[in-house]
Length: 147
Image (cartoon, rainbow, N blue to C red; front, side, top):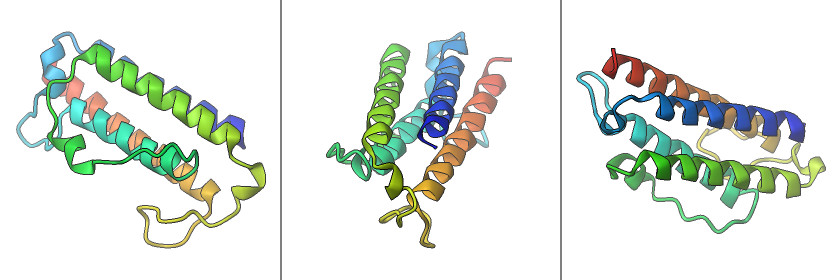
């Protein structure tokens, strides 16, 4: 199970990085187009904050303090810094999941964003799905702004 989770998180965080790299105009990463509420930069910050909170803090005991509001309000972080933050998040996920006891994945996940109780295993798949949802938004944002 751990290897599958690590594979999907790594694969999809690499896809987020690739989307950011594919912006021809780096400034467009932070643009908000009409009818779209968030920039690719803010969606990237949200992905980073979400994973550091729900995996790093809850499973890896990293002490990460989430500031969800700033995930959507901060602007203008250079692309290279976003790429580095995604790499750091990926390393945190690897460290947290590898040190997490395998038999604990069936235990109830504490305080997730979803209201119904669920296991750590189920919540990890929820987080992969959440990551993919925002990856699709970033892809659409890039294609919309860079026709």
